[in-house]
Image (cartoon, rainbow, N blue to C red; front, side, top):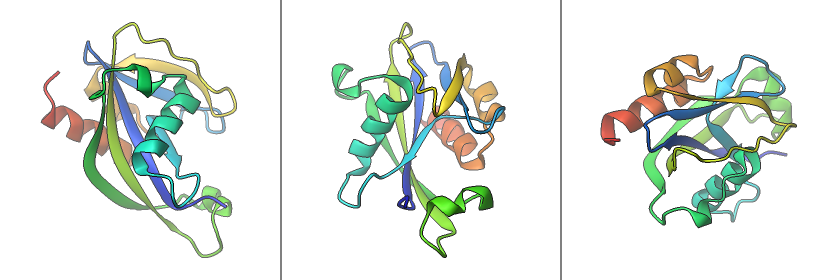
Length: 149
């Protein structure tokens, strides 16, 4: 069963473009890197680093030590009904914690084909508008209001 605590990592490059990935199980559902904790003792930062690697092939440890930033923001949202079977009975809400990751412009992306089928680098406004998730849109908008590129 999935743990209803997750991370969302907005990946952006030195040109200011945001990486979006298209879900394999839901074509036209574009998002940032997301994923639940693997176990209750996993730190949010460790989960963010693991999910980034699993979904994009990016190894956070080889980047600048300040590349991955905790945005110190979390939201609670209703889990889509079609995905509730992944959680314990009665679990309907998830707590999502936001991170940002700055990568070089020429960063190589290697998708996990079980999870995602395509990726795009987009200006922040376009990336935010393309996300299917409201919290993902807000995370992108919040990052680019706070952090100059």
